[in-house]
Length: 491
Image (cartoon, rainbow, N blue to C red):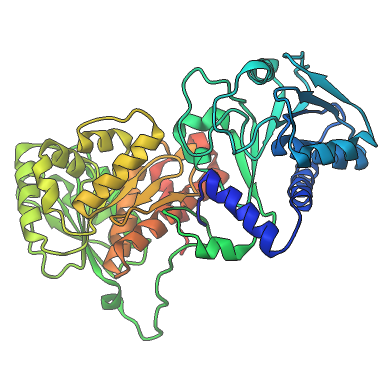
C-alpha cells in the first residue's frame, strides 16, 4: 500500500472526481457514509454525541455524518466553529441538507463538553497548512480537557499530515482516528502517538488508476502486499533452502543464540550452523538439537571466524559482547564475507558504531537491524523530530548501500533506493529482551533461501510481528516473552 503526501491525496480526490466521474459532494457523501457505518459497526455511535465542525470540507464530512447518524436514530448536537469569513461550497451544501433535520450551534470560543460523550472531530482536515489558532485552538484545548471519547475524521485537527508540529501547537488527542483510503504519514510517527490514538483506514473507492501510476517512496506493508517465499518443489531437499551461519552468544548471553537459532529453523532454512563460545556448546546442542554447533576456542566469547565457503547467509550479533577479541573477530569477518548476504544486529552494530570506518566494508545490501538508540550510535548523532529521522535513515542506507530495519512500532525497512516500508504487525508486548534476536534468526533464514535482501527484510519483519500478535492474543501482552515467538511463526 502506497503512502501519499497530503498534496497527493488531494490530487487523488481530484482525479477520482474527474475520471469516475463523481461530484465532490457525492465523494464527500461516500466518505462520510463509510465513517458512519464504522461508527455504527463498532458501537461508538451514541445518542449523546457531539460533532464539532470547521468551515472547510472536513466540517462538511462532519455534517454528513451528523445527518446519517440522525437518520439512523442517533441524533447528535452539531457545533460549528466560526473561524473564517467564508465556508467551502461543499460545507454550505451539507449544512443546508442537515438543517432540514436539526439545528446547529455556531460558536466563536471554547464550549463546555461533558466527559461522558462521544466527540466527532471534524474541525480541520489533512489540508492544514498552519497551526490551529484563535477559536479553533480554544475548542481543541477544551476537547482535550473534557475527557470525552474523541473520533477524528481523516486526521486529528491541528496535526500536520506529513511534517512536524511544534511542541505547543493545539492538536486534538483522539481515542480513534479514521482516515480514508491510505494512512497518512503522520499516523506512523512515534511522536504523534497521542495525536492519533488507534487508527483505521476506510476504503472510499478512490480511483485505483491514480494509485498505480503515481510514484511513492513510502509504503505500508499489510497481508495483501507481502513478498513471498518460493513454493517448495515436491522433490526438494534441505540443500535447496540454504545453509545459514549464526555467530552469536557470549558468557551469560548464550540464550540470545538459542532464540535466534530457534527462529531461524522455524523460518524455512535447510541447514543451520551456530558458532558460539565454548561455554555455549552444550547449551546449543541440548536446546536446539536441529542445529549444528561450532564451538569457538575461547570459553567465554567468540574470537575466530570459521570457513564461510559452505554458507549462503550469515547472521551476526545477538549476545555477542564487545570484548576486544570479539571486535577483532568482526573485523576479520568483514574481510572474509565477500558479497555473501549478511544480517548485523545488536553488539555487531555497536562494534560498527565504535568503528564507523568499517561501515564502508559491509557487503552491498547487508541487513542492519538497529533499535533507535543503536541507530543514533551508528549515525553519531540524534534527530530533531521523526521526519528528520526518516531523512537520515534514507541517507544512511544510500551512503552505505544497505537495508536497514529500524525497529519499533511500525518497524521501518529502508532500502538503498530510498524506499521506506512501514510494518503493520506487532504489539507492545514485544518490547521485551530477546525479540530482536528472534528477528535476526528469521532474517538470516530468509536470506539463506535466496530472495532479494529488501524482500527478505519486509517479509521477515511482518512475520515476526505477526507471531508476536498471535502470542499476545494467546498469552496477553504483559506475559509475552521472546521464546514464544518462534512457536507462533506461520509461513
